[in-house]
Amino acid sequence: MQPSAVSGRNLVAAAADWMEISAIANSRFRCSGKDLARTLSPLAEEFEEPDQDELLGLADVEESMLNRRDEEWLGDVLEEIQFRADALRECYPFKVVRVANDWWIEWQKSDAVPQVLYEVCLVITAARDGIISPQPDRLDGILQLAAYLTAGSLIKGESHWMGFPRPDGTGFKASLETCLKRMGYRNVELRPPPWTYRNDQDAGIDIISWKGFADQLPGRLVVFGQVASGRNQWKDKSVKPFLDADIGPWLGVFRPGTLIEAMFVPWPLYSEVNHVERLRRTGEHKSFRDWAHDEGLHLEKKLGIIVDRERLVELASRGISTGLDDEPTHLATLRNWHSAALALLTE
Image (cartoon, rainbow, N blue to C red; front, side):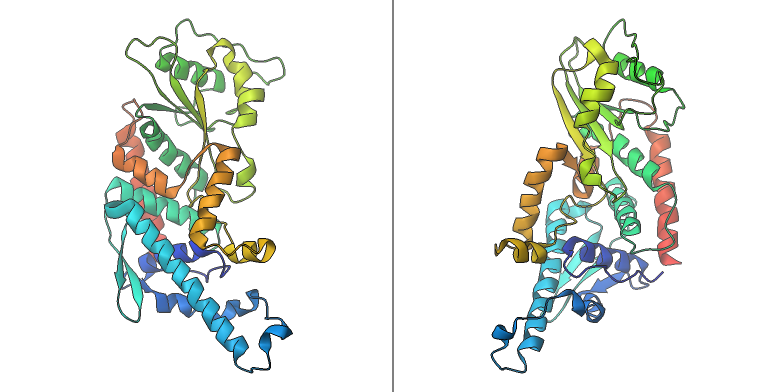
């Protein structure tokens, strides 16, 4: 498979994803900065032409400015690749090689769960961004599975799959009651709010994880998370309104007093940061990494804890923890999907 060219020169994270996908799809399992540079010419029109006052009568200014912008962009992509490698270390499935006049990444194929999970999230992101086609199937379900397997590690606890359709086929009320009983609550019998259909799909909550105490008495840390594998308005899909208007009334007195809202996504949380556009609009000369940091500050206010690709992999490196004996079956499903997705890339 030949991955499609990156859709926007200013989207640094997408360009890094393109390089990683290209390394997997390439027979040499390698992609270089020069390979990425070859994609630049079709995107030249994305940059604004310099003002006439900037030209100062020098015929070569336009070309030199474009070259400088190209070099800065390539430098930002390299920095993003290196950021991922430094953050994930042995869990990053690529080796970064830097020489005097070039740099490249080499795919380090591995069947370890963190690396498999990274590549699963990478493929889902590339499919949603139009980098690969045809797309693997069940993108939503496989990301819910990945979140379910790792969410417990977020607080060193257990997790429950609430997202619809649930693997065990249970109805909403029965599943939620099972979750509360697993937490240690006694005499659980939920009553649906009068405005519901009495058997909601998931009431906007895909994953619940918790950390309690050995006495199983009330008072525990609980995470309510939503899983988003689609690009369509994912930043507006906070679990907070669902907790207040939907699942909260279902829980009644069992609603935890100490909870964390979370969002699970397969891309870096800053993947849509366009720092060139932000420079034009604000006049602030900040690096891509600074803008990525600021994006994290903003999104936490809207969505709570964002468990993105790197964080999912980090959680997996701490160990899979659901609290149930279904982990081998779900890990096998994850691995099978991963193998089928890689087969599409390399065919």
